[in-house]
Length: 307
Ligand code: 3PG
Image (cartoon, rainbow, N blue to C red):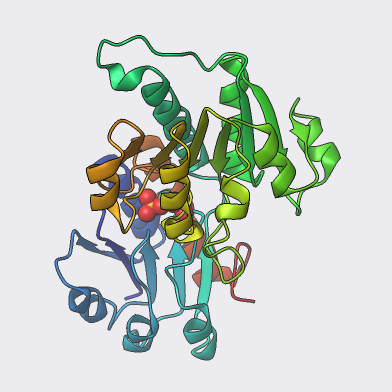
């Protein structure tokens, strides 16, 4: 029987797993569940006899792909697929897909939630500030960036965006001011929200040259990936500018240094939480299951990312 494995170290909400099961079993396939697995070997073993896998940020490297003797498709239930070795998958003829847009509202709500939490002094009783009339720069205007713009406008923020892959018209029809370069965005806005993917071009691209431009009081919000930040440069900015804060949905490598020196100027979620809502889990998980069914039954390759 055709088997579909869910391999999620950070499990989906149970209601999402129920929905995925309905789609998979409804297609006549068997669902295999591997959640909160303690060792990478558990994933490697579980993939051995399955035809398809649904993952989240789970490390899906060459050893996983090669272990999947019957593997035909891997779907990343989410947007960023930097956790999947596309080359290894292509070499074995394994199709890799993502589910773009399905968890973007959840990530956007977290970005704004962290901003509110920070400007209101972590709800510690001290007087804070407001987001209304502040300038927000959205770095990359994909599905998450678009949702961030929508919510930020509800707060009364002045919203700007930079994205070399999206036309000025598409950005400005949302009532967002389109800027021509990252440099201009960082020089204009006090709040910067990052929504770029992690790849060879973007790794450590958020560096001193960009960060030093953000006018005080500067707040950098990262619900994208830790790898896009040049952490040594970020620490340098923290030393140089008192009015600089970093809010991130993933702990930095040098977390201890932030804790020791910069109390009150950062917030880090202990585990990546952006897409961790029932709604996002249902949307992304069920989309992944449906994409697997139409791929295995009809050869539909919409959303393939390793072409
Ligand atoms: C994504 O790329 O979709 C988000 O970063 C969410 O990742 P997660 O599924 O690991 O929470």
